[in-house]
Image (cartoon, rainbow, N blue to C red; front, side, top):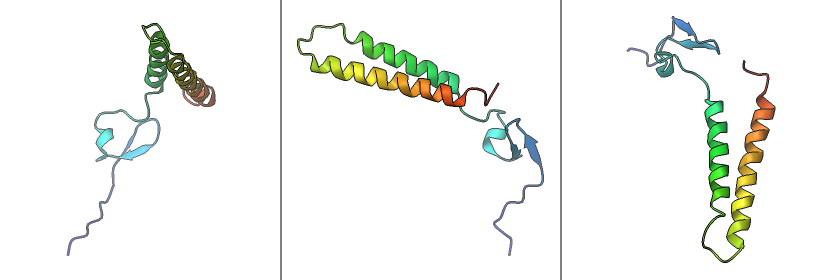
Amino acid sequence: MASTDVEHTEFIDTGWRREPADAPSARFGWHGVATKTFYGAAVFFAAFLLLMLIGNHNGRVEDIYLVVFAVGILVLAIRGWWMSRGKWS
């Protein structure tokens, strides 16, 4: 009976780690996380939330939530950038 285990005899060096040649992402040559894209998106959405302060609403409860969420997004983005600096060039 044939074994269901896959034997990896050939590996591709991706710069991050050695991957089996039949790994789905090895064909495209991309590994890892797009951190710059995530940081850019975080800044964009925080700015979008702060721009939503301009409007025709009367209450201030919405403003508090918008500012808290925008600051939270920026804090998480800055923390992620600060913790990962120097790990990748």
